[in-house]
Amino acid sequence: MLQSAKLKFIFPIGFFLALFLDGSINLIFSGSLFAYPYSMVSNLTILWMILAIFFEGETKLPIATWAAGVGLVFDWFYTGVFGVNMFILPVIVIITQWVKVFFKPTFLSILLTFFLALTLYESAFYIVFEIVHYTSITSPEFVAYNLAPTLALNLCFFVILYLPVKSLFRHTRGANFRSID
Image (cartoon, rainbow, N blue to C red; front, side, top):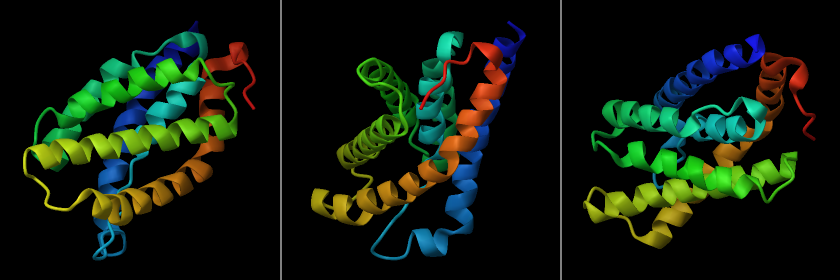
């Protein structure tokens, strides 16, 4: 019971830490990440969400609720268009939780789920910004110059952070952790 309480405390801290790390990475490495015509965006918040969905176990964290809160903060700090992330992030959580039941949680299945969730997130973000005329690039340019580099960067982050985050959840959840992978 105490382990579950620790996870409910650590999860939102990690979520907001990932959010602010995203902003810091994007700012500090902006010269490399946003070198014309390419654009790579760090999405550690999506990574944290997906890994939490797979590693939460019986704790049942309110991930969609936290995703809406983090999305609102993201919109407030980074985009200036309120509501986009506040709705997209919880939808990503709901879809991922639905898809999760069809996969045995292994490294590759979680990687594939993260890849699909990130693609959905970036595409939804692009579509909304296209609708409100906040962007002027075409769909093929978006895929070639934004989506593909963003996926490559974040898949590297996934490979690097998978075991540490898995270990954090394992130690936080204690003895009732079902071995994954």
